[in-house]
Image (cartoon, rainbow, N blue to C red; front, side, top):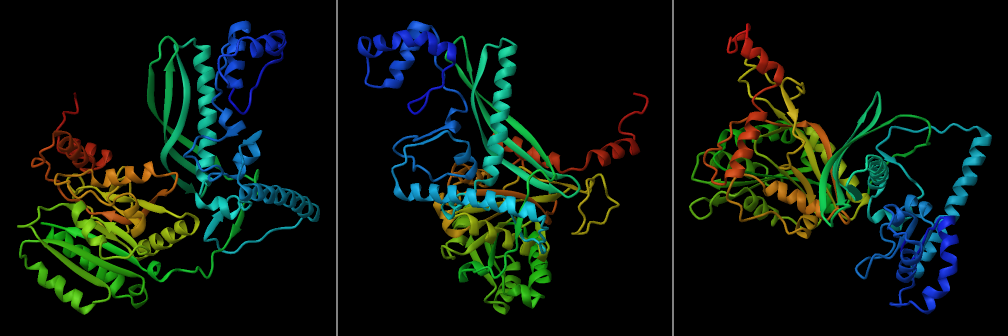
Length: 506
């Protein structure tokens, strides 16, 4: 129950009826009728009124003074709700009315098309629109995935409540919410999602509340249950600042890796006159008067509009990747798109094109968007010394997709500034990228966080220097990351038996 709605069973209403007059005339303790009704039911019917988990969906109510009513409306929310309260804005009323009219028109249109038995044809698809009935107002936040996931989370919570009740558990589930997740399309099956959720549970014997982290695996097959419409995006109106993807790489004491990165950029971008128009490279180098400076300077002079070289003397500043990335971002304007990459990365030109198109599309449907690509990390050759690695190779025995790697990110400059930018005081190993990801996740109501696998982005293996890390927890994390990339399970087992490290008889 709540201020905007109460659900009572018939038997409860029969027992409550004779007491209502007395409760509201002689036993009032507050001016809130919903509170008094709950007290009346508890006192005279001996039933405790509870807030149903899904009541917020059926009784859509104002959440407080800081809540902008109606900003997160979607067709699913509006269609499912019994009431929408309170609507004090005339624009919101008009949009709801237009939505209702549009629903009626769509219903009539579907009946007409069905009777004519027409076949819809599509061209090659650049984008899929799951729900074409959304008003422009609802496109501020792209809630298509969120609504689908929240529906599954709600179903899971309800089933969990029933299960715990049957087992006479001392715990009950209060609510649950999705944090972040990943999705992919399997062509021969359908849609697959992996979603992390937080479940809040409360003890029935005390007021103790605990938070449990769960992981969802959701699979939706390709079926004809729902009609999916497609539209092809053409003549995309780009702002001048968004017409280029600006690559930023920070390097220190990794001259071989930086040379490999530069040669990769030359081969994929600089040798292609068409791609030169859409990509730039900014190198922020923590210098110790190394000879590689001359090479980078010559390239930047040859391509002044494409390559920018920044240097920072390490005698004045200790190497700090977050600081280097933040200082490099200051050379760009608010609407320019930045792609922060690790210096150990290898990439294809097509991967950069895909990344550029994706972030532009995300920004066309959301006022704020950030893309953390899931890259392919190559194993060491310790257990697979006979294989010659090619950039196009993506095999289970050669590497893995780093789901928990956040060091490579595509973001608009203004959106980066919106969450405070990169950490600049982190002189130890790691975490600046994880903390950046957490900042965007905490702002997920306003900024769309997207993750997807990109096989064309590959992390070249290098041995990590973990023993110099002062923080014990970060040092353990470093060693764990190092162990993960030593090799595949198959190759490691084969290596052990081939070299008789383990006795077969044991």
